[in-house]
Amino acid sequence: MAMKPVTAMKLSPLPRLLAPLLAAIVAALPAAAAPAGAPAAETEAQKAERMQWFADAKFGVFIHWGIYAVDGVDESWSFFNGKMSHADYMKQLDGFTAKRYDPQAWADLIRRSGARYAVLTTRHHDGVALWDSRQGVNVVRDTPAKRDLVGPFVDALRKDGLKVGLYYSLPDWSYADYDVFTRKEKRYELKDEPQRWRRFLSYYQGQLADLQRRYRPDLIWFDGDWEHNAEEWQSAKTKRDLLSRNPGVIVNSRLNEYGDYATPELGLPVVRPDAKWWELCLTMNRSWGYQPRDNDYKTPHQLIRILAQTASMGGNLLLDIGPREDGSIDERQVGILEKMGRWTRKHAEAIFGSVAGIPLDHYAGPSTLSKDGKTLYLFVDGRPGGGELMLKGIDTRVLRARVVGDGRELKPYVSGKYDWSKVPGLLYVPLPDDALDADITVVALELAEPIKLYREESKPIESNG
Ligand code: GLC
Image 1 (cartoon, rainbow, N blue to C red):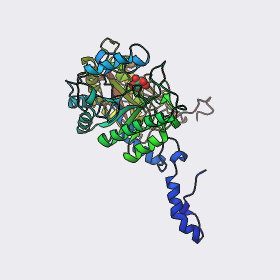
Image 2 (cartoon, protein in one colour):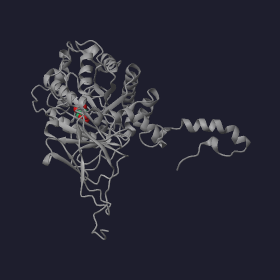
Image 3 (cartoon, protein in one colour):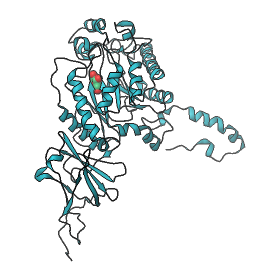
């Protein structure tokens, strides 16, 4: 039940004097009563405002950089799963040099790809922090890199007008006071040694405060929440603290139920996710971190298709790169980002700031809409059958049709429309072969009013008069 603010109630003189005190007590109550994921006072409209840049961004670059790039092994999981010992894994600290690290070149590459934000692994499950953290293992104290790697990248991103996301793993499998060590070994049970767990909580919450104070991220990307429940992690408090330090900060779903948006991983959703905001994180090959032997790269064309599909379902794509230990980036990964950049530059208006498109019943392919609903973008993969697109149930007049990024005017026509029927008829858009993009062509339909879709079931004809 919603509680009336104490001060708004009708009160007799004595309680009226107590009212401010009561109000202060209510305000100080734990926000556990607030809807999951929202700070106590945030309305849906305020949340939408906080989420707006993210909703508009549509494309981000994920960066998994850590000591696992030295031997080219699975990030953190290699020792967790017993593929190598923890001691051998940590020997990679000695080989992590960052000697060719050029944060501005990274940021420029990301900007050229068209991405609007980046998310850097500041500390993976192995516990190796990329900044000069007070506690735990870090690259400044414990590797030849000997410097903060987060700050310069954050500055470079901001210089390029990109939003800053910091990945942070809740678990730290190397930390002596963290309960889980590997898949097979546990250091202790929380119920037996609650003081150790409390030490871990203050360690991780302290690191987050430190990250926020130093870098003021726009987004915090949690990972690994599955190892404990919200109560154990103190997820509600963590979320509240994050927002009180950076009121606009956005948090992904992996903070138990306290995240702001859904985080499907690796698999392109088949049906539109049931979440207002979501982001698909995806590897370019099969690895998050740098693994030179993994040649199983997706092609730029496949990735552009996936970007069109995610935007069509109203989501974002967070595409991963894994730099080498020295900070250089594999040419194959650079090539993919450059090729995506060619396509996103040409088709920017159809992707960035768009909203989900129309159901596949109306157009058999991905589509997006401008926020005002008056421009419909149709993604065309290859040559359409018969050289023309076909749409069903478009109940709004098309003022103009054009090829995005090319400007060519198209001549759509309606077929099978009868005055006595409400069915809008079929809308055809002929598309000349020489207007086709090498990857995916986008056709914009400018409409007389926000799109209306006709979705009634077809009925037998009762009258044709
Ligand atoms: C998984 C893995 C991790 C990776 C992450 C990225 O949760 O634990 O290695 O960083 O996915 O989404």
